[in-house]
Image (cartoon, rainbow, N blue to C red):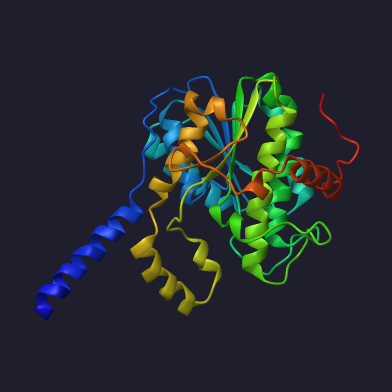
Amino acid sequence: MYALAAVLMALLCVLLLRRLKARRLCMDTKRLDGKTVLITGANSGIGKETAIALARRGARLIITCHDELKGESAVRHIQRESHNLNVHFMMLNMANLQSIRNFCKTFIHSEKRLDILINNDGVPALLDWTDDGFSMCFGVNHLGPFLLTHLLMGLLKSSSPSRIVTITSDVYKYQKLDFQDLNYNIVPIFTYCRSKLASIYFTQEFSRQMEGKGVTAYAVHPGYVVGDWTSQFSVLFRIVMYVFMSMFFISCEAGAQTVIHCAVSDEVLTHNGGYFSDCQPRKLRPYAQDAGIAKKLWEASEGLVGLTSHRDN
């Protein structure tokens, strides 16, 4: 009797785990021939899987990371998997504002268009600082993409219709922003949650400012994904997380599906500024839809990255 109960419990657990890990697939088969796609941090994880998928659709692809060897290795892997040789690497350190400015200057000079920008590069809950003195999570996950998108705005508008996809997370719901201490960096997981909430506000405010200008924006929660982000932690932590992730987390390929969906599908166009997960628009907590806070964060971010006087018409 006990053995039967144990078997039934085990089967129930297996079915539950399969359900938790089940994800929708992007079914849109649109080609991207003649389109230019920029994906930050695409040397591994979701970024690399997204890059392979979009390169297979014929896009001209530029990927970035802060390590040249890893970047060039990723390019070769993406070219091999996608059978597309029009994949290129450019150096970019999202933890350094000057690196972002230099990158954008080079990119605008060398590229004629930018059809899809995917702000994928990010860091986990780290207690560290950027080169400019910002908390690593807030600096890389929010301020870096904010400045990058700002500086590439002209190219995005001239290439319209164009899109911006920014990676966020549903952990946004566990924190709120403190405008008295946007650079908060005491409890790393809290800082991470705030940075992901900031990404949602950024997407909403950007979509409002770009309304009618041919550029749309989407925030994506890809799901909880098995990746190499644990490499920055202790061996014991990596072992524990490996066991946990193998049970509950999804693959990078599955996690990339919603990113791909928002990059190519016309279904998302009616949800400009929206938050997506599992290839569907999702409802946000009320405080995460506050247009006043989104605008306030936008203006504060302009000041932090040195763009206070900049306004797009």
